[in-house]
Amino acid sequence: MAFDVRQKQKMKKNWHLYLISIGVLLLIGGFIYDIMFAGIPYQDPTPVLQANYDRHSGIASSIMQAGAGLFSLGLLSLIFRRVLQRFSPTESP
Image 1 (cartoon, rainbow, N blue to C red):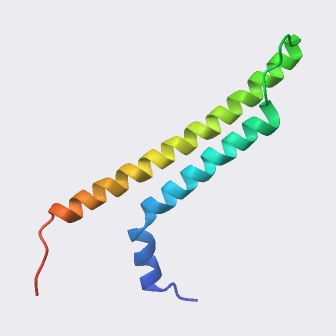
Image 2 (image 1 turned 120 degrees about the vertical axis):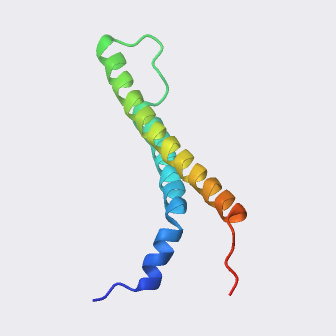
């Protein structure tokens, strides 16, 4: 099956939107992971419970940081692309 050229051009054109979408999904996923597995910290935890909470909280934080990074990268690339399009000379036939 041949890959349609228009689909390939569309993917190249919108790659920053994919980064933004994946970043938002990772942010939401990290938040949900934090609520489901880490939850509210214990008042007087045992060392085992504290270690378990710290581990899950660190994982959730890493997921959210990756999401924020991808979101920021996608947003900056979108802004950069729009600025380049605005100030680049246009060809007239």
